Image 1 (cartoon, helix red, strand yellow):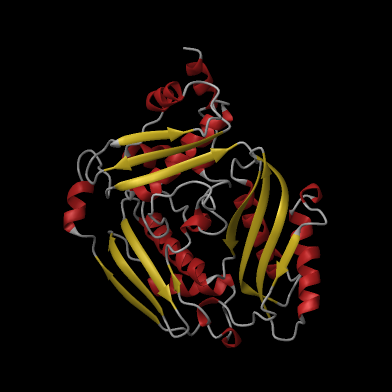
Image 2 (cartoon, rainbow, N blue to C red; image 1 turned 30 degrees about the horizontal axis):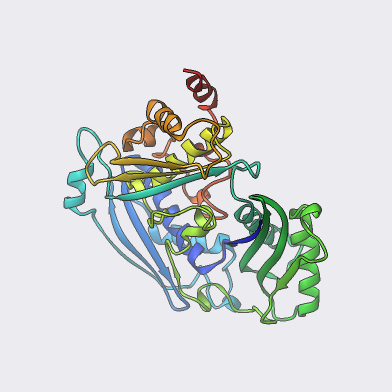
Length: 378
């Protein structure tokens, strides 16, 4: 049976990703001075202003406006022609302390979850990154778009951009790329034919293996014919609006909670990271070719209320035994997740672009594989 599956990614200059990066840059700044900081910081950006809002409780003092401006400028919005300039855009800050009602559930002798809810973790053996093929290549194309812009290989590119990859599966295995969609913001003087040729040669060709492309592969590059204005000058940005880009490209279910701007007591972030860590180690130990893990929490409680797994019938041992191994070997309590994955360190801004999974981050380590294999035989 043949099926098509599609995932998308965005560049760092996408308006929602600008907001994610500012949120996580602020989080990192607080954690660098106060590892116990409680941060829930969201950002909204449009052509006229940037608004930073949320709840922060910390003994540290941070220059929030300076961090926001530096983040915007580093992305590439540094001149008036883009109609969004980190040097001059008005920035409004509206922050307050964390609700004491929430703090009652978190600041206990034994750290409780910062909220109720559920999270999902996923891993598959179909790529080296243990990520689904479509989102894996969508991220790589988006990163390449940024690379050729910042290295001046394609100096006419501007910061905003989106990618989309459709993969054809046959008998549940990725066989070929059916289509590639790329929207790349550009300077006014470049013509469409040149841009389309350059994107194929400098962005797609270095990233997508030739054996996955054929004469039937479709390419849709800047289909409207023009993409000069981008970022917050053409579309409002908001923290947490790219949750499928951040996770598994819709290939796995999602608990609904966004990541950026939240410290690790918020289990919709730390729990999702830990669930990915567990899933990846399970697949790497060959207990299944793919696995999806759901974990649920109640505010103030240390232990999860439930853990559910689905191997989509790819398991090599009974799912009941896989679940037993997970309970034996992994601890989903907030304090353990924070300790085991170093989540009190200022590491979050680098998670923000090109997905929170499948790259060099603490929750991607494969340090439990041998122990899992030992438990398989018991």
